[in-house]
Length: 239
Image 1 (tube, rainbow, N blue to C red):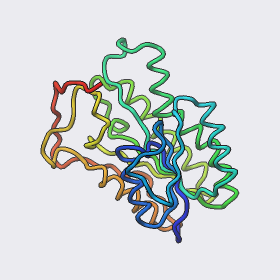
Image 2: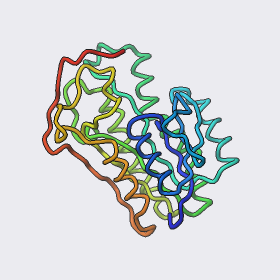
Image 3: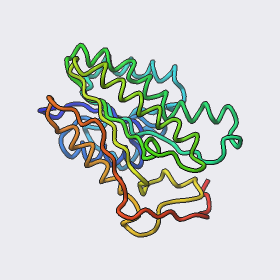
Image 4: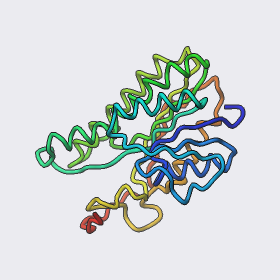
């Protein structure tokens, strides 16, 4: 976008979504933050609009996005929401499997179902998805999370082919372990050294670079990794 426009960001209340919202607000963008919590103190800004919604409620989500697009012109979508569930597949109920796929994958597809026609009419728009290294290499106990992230990666690749001639740019950012609230309720986390994890601000910087890139190119995928990978196990759950 040549001039700051309006960006819709999911997961805006914490982690990568929060860092991206703060960065874009500082650059003069209007930000619509969609999250379960909605309003958060760290996003007190005249250019920030909070929308409270659980991404697991897909029908309500479609209605919410439809209402939003009737009143606001959105130039860019950043899908930063996500949750991690790790373990052997038999440990998860059918309800847990469905809920994980809804939040990590289906919600992005539902939002794009409403956004893409609007972007086509505008003749431009950016779709930026926060994926994961789990979309590149599946790991032990990660079947549920990797399935969603591999699905998101495939969705992005197909969407890019479908929308390129309509002026829509589709990008995917695949971070390794990010030091964020993502790990609050998990039994593991990145190692303690700064080189063991990516900071949320680093991911936000990449999103910013994509937004600022030329309208005539597409940054297909960006893969980010900590300089030295290390995982600390046995962390007590904070749930």
